[in-house]
Length: 349
Image (cartoon, rainbow, N blue to C red; front, side):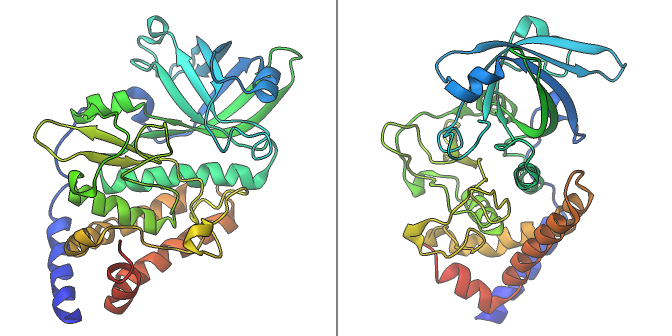
């Protein structure tokens, strides 16, 4: 049985290598068309954001960056705290943010056609581990981008913050995440707002890809079928629909993964994991027949993933080594028929 499965995988690898990621979609927005680190300056009443963490109203702020022609572009923004776990003061001294742009100002700028954007912040100011976690989470998004266009686009930032109240400044990395409405436009799908769904309603190939990706990064903090009571489905997945097609479930928010290893991350006690770096496959058994083709997709982009990590600016030598080792462990697993049976087909739901 192992030999026949491996023959299928070998054929699948050859097939994937000879094909693209699939359908061609709309071009990326200017903000997400480059992988270069974008340097920003944000000025706002940061003491209010840090102390009160308002989520119901935007505070006035200013954002500026240096354009390619060396012109300083200045934009008025609204800024507020967002999130749940990371918004708690006992978890992060600096909360994740949401930025609100004025469309009339963004024309012909890097932020053209952008309105509201999530900003993943550095959690703790002047913390090496927090900064490394932000860059690692950015890489997690970028890895999924390599696997499929049906993923959230991201831009890595280096931000200089200025507190309006006293002029104090501090710096930290950040990530801007493509808005779900912009993603929907790019993929010609519609955002779906429901409380829960069934696995049988989801695109099986994409679900298999996303499930194995979550295993690669060592993430168990998600659900593709439900969310907390009163919240929109699903937990750390966004659903999209297209008439006559299965729902598309796209993952986001990877800070609790072993790949990121955020300072505050803890393993899910219900799953009996000792460490956030312990992997557990949370895919579904009905997709087991799709695993060979899914693994083939990962094998086809292995070199790109490793190159992405090797060349990523801002990673410490130690963190780079840890990420490459973590990825190598994943590839060792999917390259062994016995390990696949033990870690995937015997552990599916």
